[in-house]
Image 1 (cartoon, helix red, strand yellow):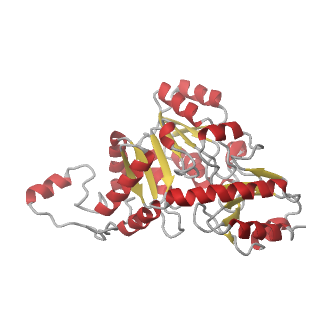
Image 2 (image 1 turned 180 degrees about the horizontal axis):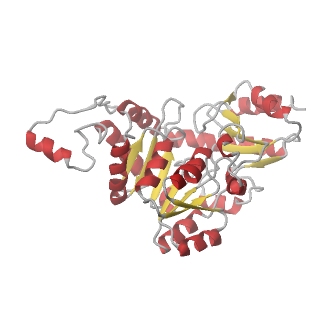
Image 3 (image 1 turned 135 degrees about the vertical axis):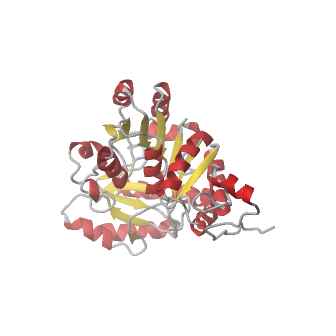
Length: 374
């Protein structure tokens, strides 16, 4: 028996008989027939993910965006109405606001902090509710349990993107969501070495999602699945350190005279601090903050750090920083009123993802970078 699971790096499997081949052709999620339909290495990862999320099963994808788009298209039909949070990752917002509407879906946006607005939409009839557990990039923590309760009350499917709240920050099994989506590229793999996505849900919903996944060709490569699977084995250790380091850095930034605002769930100044203490096991590894001053401070703060890298993405073992409006969320700059209600971040907002470097080195790096601001 191997200590580490093997990689089945193959696109197809030789069938032992005609009868089994025909049966596999008409089976749902066969694991050893054709890798676009299923693969033992990918299946191993899906079992890990389902165990972490405490769901019946999981469906793995080649990226977080492929998971989000396939789930939304699989569980809704053109003409259906979807209630979608205004506070989303830029590409998620763009897909809902532009492409889904172009495909004939009715997308209605709601402010996730306003559950009364959501209930009004649900009363008018919504097939699904889509939101983020902790919003990207401004770290708003909505009443996730109430959103899922309302969706269930009105017969809508609740779909939550929990990428910012991995195991060790939020146990999504407590929310009651029908589908939990993760970008495996972030905390789940944790090493900035592979793309991946996943939807954790019931067997019944997974079957619907799988049929669309195979049709769209959004299957995960076995080697990518193996890399994510290896990363998952250390997720609780990694996230625990990221929680601890980010909490110290958030306190440092909150007290720094050059920093005008800090958003971190475990800070008392966070608008949903009490909810964060109740719902989250840790504050996570992402901090949103602003420094103000002239526009030149944006480039200066991004380029001055020596330890922290200037990069998009988050959740990995290396600390990275970005300017949200011009980088990860630049695609929503012209989205009009809907974007201004949440998805368009403030012009001076920075997103810092804390890695596994020594926290004192990170604090010193931020101190010298802030000292260079005008």
